[in-house]
Amino acid sequence: MQGTLWYTASVHEANARDWLAQARRGVIELCVLSLIAHAPRYGYQLATALAELGKPLASSEGTLYPLLRRLESQGLLVSEWREEDKRNKRFYRISREGKVVLKQLLSEWQSIGRSLESVLKES
Image: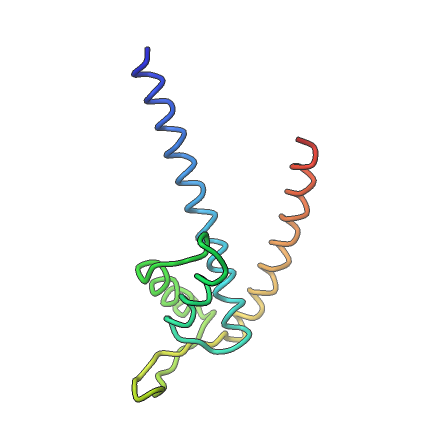
């Protein structure tokens, strides 16, 4: 019986971790688009900005750089190499399509937030 309780608890913990990871990915994507919409940035600048926003948004290079490449391949970001501090760095800026998508994502996020607040107030 106790083995079953342990298994059930670990399944619930794994499900919670999966759910949180998925939610976090969506939030980080929204944050990255928003940060880049304000000003072009390179990867390390983005990682630093996300970390400064708090631990839940802190991203490893293994998460951030594939995300940047994916957003660029989807046409939401455009990159260019620039020399800064005697080093070449890949700067990302938001594309026209990226601005449209960001606007849609922000609207949806705000709608979800309002709905979530209503649900949580009832509980």
